[in-house]
Image (cartoon, rainbow, N blue to C red):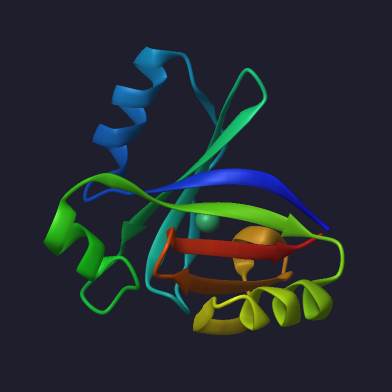
Length: 129
Ligand code: NI
């Protein structure tokens, strides 16, 4: 079973993005460095809606392509799964393709995260509960 967790934004400059979104009313936690993925991550919240800012630390990050093609932009919706293997099996059966296989993520306290792509709806992320 899946539930919506956050919308992920790819941003070139973390400080600038934080300021722009704080102006809208979002409240942010600390910036988390994920050096395995070469990104900095920061979660924000407003009215119970969560967003995640993903900013490259250097070249070779997973958001390089998104930023190059689209600039600063929302680029994935993340769903929380209480049974990752089962949900992945169903999604793959339904046409989703694994883009980045399950990996433990610092920003989620070591829980596993998977990125999938559907021709119909684009990029999604699944994080285990
Ligand atoms: Ni995300």
